Amino acid sequence: MPEITFIDHGGEKRVVNAATGSTVMEAAIKSGVPGIVAECGGACACATCHVYVDEAWTATTGTPSHMEEDMLDFAFDVKPTSRLSCQIKVTDAMNGLVIHTPPRQG
Image 1 (cartoon, rainbow, N blue to C red):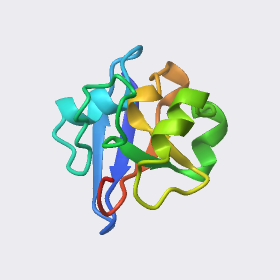
Image 2: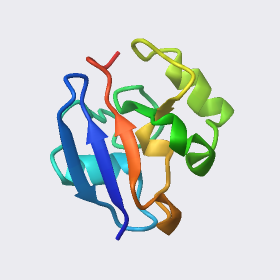
Image 3: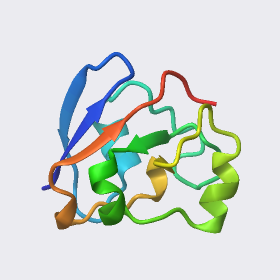
Image 4: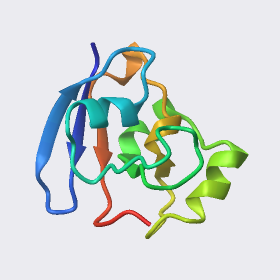
């Protein structure tokens, strides 16, 4: 199982195990990571699972789809590395992935 490190806006780190094939959002919710609300349950219909992918991992996690980009318009403090965690599928290549959570969800 790949390990993902979530870092909140205060710098606190939480390392969680994520099942390959799940999403970063599912791993966060299952492990009780604060700052990931996921109101729509992963349907890409809100922006309450907004995260920042660490720059070292952006190539591995890929780019947002058009639908995801539209939803990111509703997120708080969007940055170039912003993604919806429900849209990032976990692969074995993501072992060590670093994700930052914003100070609040939009």
